[in-house]
Image 1 (cartoon, helix red, strand yellow):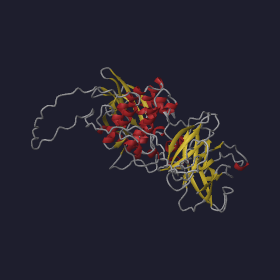
Image 2 (tube, rainbow, N blue to C red):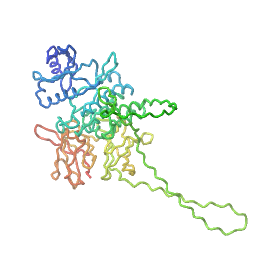
Image 3 (cartoon, rainbow, N blue to C red):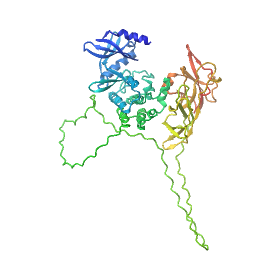
Image 4 (cartoon, helix red, strand yellow):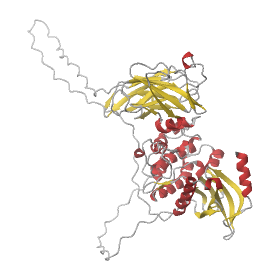
Length: 582
């Protein structure tokens, strides 16, 4: 395939398309090839993006390409690559834009490694301002990643940063989504949970990608380094935002707080704008400049202000770069850890005086103070149901430890997860409203540590529950001799969702359900079966059992493989592929 692409690109060199002489290939992507070209009439260099004829004939690809031209051409911002021309010639769609003589952010990171916070803010600050302009226009970029950020040196203005490639952008309101239902578009390492789940998007989705990109710039690694794409997607849905200081201990904890808020799972928990996120990141390392003490001034005599003439409006606010009015952002608030309320001690009861003793001859002993009873213990908060079936397991190809549990009640709880360190102390891993969390701070090869889970509902807390370590189980007689990679580590992540380790090479799974006892084998004649594809697992984060199935019930999952047009089911379950659905 690369040889064919190189041959196709070479065939365009020297040709003239829509008044552009194509000179050299400068980039390739999912939407086509980008060439350096010369506009013959205007005599200037441009970047010419070309969609091959076989894709131009596809209605869906053509609509996406035309949308990129319309969206990018409608935006006026100094940090957005401007569009000169677009059209359709000889069965080919083309897009002519400004040629940026520079490199993308990926090349900067490969050459420079982890960057200082000031450098990251200098690079991503213009990108954040450009994204805010995109969002004010009612659009969402949807693919914020290093390859779509260009960095160029300018002799007069220094370093210039540009945001490019709106090929998968979509309107956030008042327009039809050109992406098919259930189709996932974007780059997995920088995609927000709502984008993965196919929900309605707004500018806060781009802020999530920008926060993931900031983590990459600060640490040199992507936020969720996983070998399999579905593991990356599941981490975006369930794992707590990673801590920058785990790889950069030289940075203050405020950097962790800013990145965690920008990459929060819920859009409402993020910053109001992308610029506000960058400002919080900058404020984490650059203290505010002290304001000079104002000198006392005499109070001037008030002068009457003339009333505005009829028909004259007050002056408009000074426009920001790019022609758009600068919005006044609310001040960001520091992130605080939730603290359990300390109950006030009950008042001590009044001491009861003892009756006077009869006088006795001899010296009078010193009086003994009356004993005061200890104050009654303060009434603690009402108990919250403790989490059930707390397990900590590590995948065979992933050093991260996944902690799962089952809610102790029907309410939606907040959970605090702590890890026991080698010196016996408990260190907080994170807080979540889900029933699973991934801890990537455990070194590969180290034993699975103990984890403590505490559920919280308002100001009430549960008793702490310590996890049980589940080591990977080798193939046994139960998994049969079929050679199928078995499904393992089945757990109930919520009232109707099953989570497990999906093995490589398996594209479908069979869920077997019984109400009376655990299923004995995948061909259990008295069981109900569903076949759910791997793509459904990637998008939903788990296998969802229909609400029509009576609870409680026993569930088990078996691997499946396609052999021609037939579905072949593994002959047995793995010993860890069974659970109870409450």
